[in-house]
Image 1 (spheres, rainbow, N blue to C red):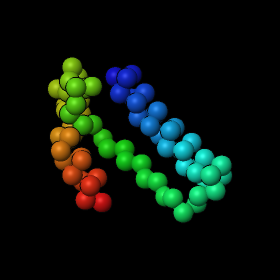
Image 2 (cartoon, one colour; image 1 turned 45 degrees about the vertical axis):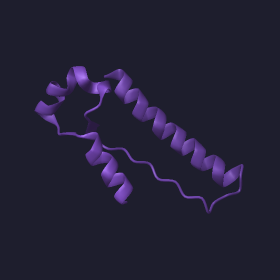
Image 3 (cartoon, rainbow, N blue to C red; image 1 turned 120 degrees about the vertical axis):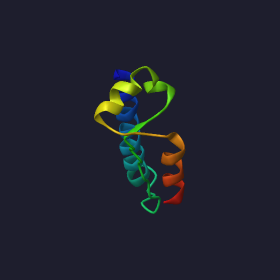
Image 4 (cartoon, rainbow, N blue to C red; image 1 turned 90 degrees about the vertical axis):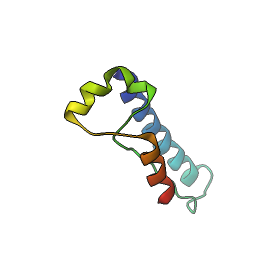
Length: 72
């Protein structure tokens, strides 16, 4: 599960760095950013562990996640 956790950490780091760069380096505070961090999504990345994860936490279908993001 290290790969799953690492991708979430990487996205968060990219988001924070890019937002800071927009504000300071590009002087563009009017550009707003949003980061979406859903729980578990049933993707190939967790396929070998999905049954284990479902015992403790919900696992969302990717369409449910993407529909919610687009709706917002």
